[in-house]
Image (cartoon, rainbow, N blue to C red; front, side):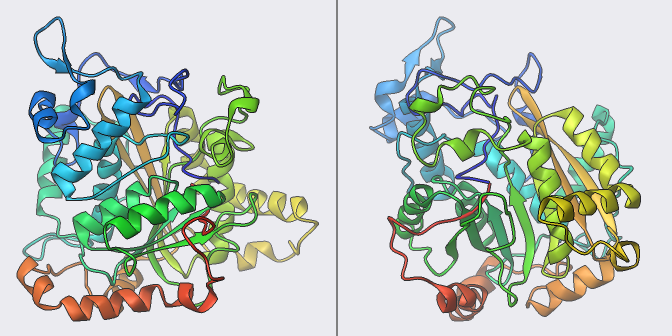
Length: 429
């Protein structure tokens, strides 16, 4: 649960010391899959590094002409990756951004991909009053090109809700604060970011302040490393979604990192008990206690084997009951009698395949609400997902946006412990 539980194996994620790259390769291909990114992505075409270098002086020292005559950078150089992410966020999203050397650097296009897929979950209907979007536990994770084209066309017609009344929870916001920044810039959403590292929160707060997003993005400290939602959510919170990039490894040793070299706040980015699978299983277990406060629970998944086991778990009421029993026993023998009668049912599970550069990742999502309740809650927040909000109306309604935004983060102000950028905190990732 820590400062961005970022996966191993993503090309652009590199350790701050520059001497170690995470080694998990995920599902690899020999070609770039940028064209397979979400239809609303701004990153279908690879940027010209020479052009970016001329425009952003701090990026220029890292760009060179490779043997094919095109621009490139050293993807093993952590400083080069930070400079690349910084100029991409400025070029495509107008965001100011910085990251301490000790934290993992996120690849901007892949992070934006996840944000767009979450937006599709909230877009209950298509433009023109189209049919409700269906998903389910039986949804396949691989499609042929014709099906992919059809899916892209469907996504182009979706109208995701925009505006600060849509509030998301970023579990493990990390020092980079990337999901909250992209969600605010792309859709005008409001975020609460949680993390177990005060150092990560401090760095994230600097990014929030640099972009004047203090009314849109609030940070909370998770004080218990074994918890995900508990200790972060308050009774008055309502979130349209939660998102998370779990730590991949079970230990720093399995990640190939010397624990003595890991600075405070870094360990949670790399590893946690049970690794990726264990973390998401704990998230599923806790989600039952917050099933009426979060519409869609989501998580990034790096391993296909993890994805298969999670889908099986979410599709089996008996397996879910056993998961809750295990949790009750671990926490000192909680009440498990009558569990079958009290157990909320998972109404829908969805799996989305993310084509990210040369790798494939997945997003798994589950909800305890049927489509009617989901749409009703979104409507009560002031933005039905079946209607669009034009940019012109958003600009004219700026004061209303600020009002909606402040309502979304009211709980933060009421329970704030006089945090400052150096000791505020957020939770798991």
